[in-house]
Image (cartoon, one colour):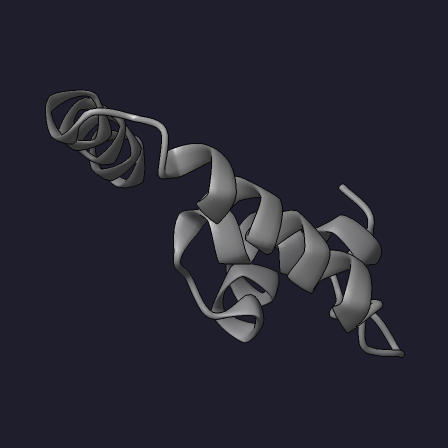
Length: 69
């Protein structure tokens, strides 16, 4: 892994980027990632999630949480 995707991966895993950097030995990027592209990606994810049923959204949440363990 390179420093640039480290911040994105830390966001997906809900782990602070500094902690993930320390655990993986990958340094944090020298410059903050482009927040506009990150915000656009997050907005798209939220928009797509709105179309899921409550049951399906719970399955996605449970799967994501199990990946953190």
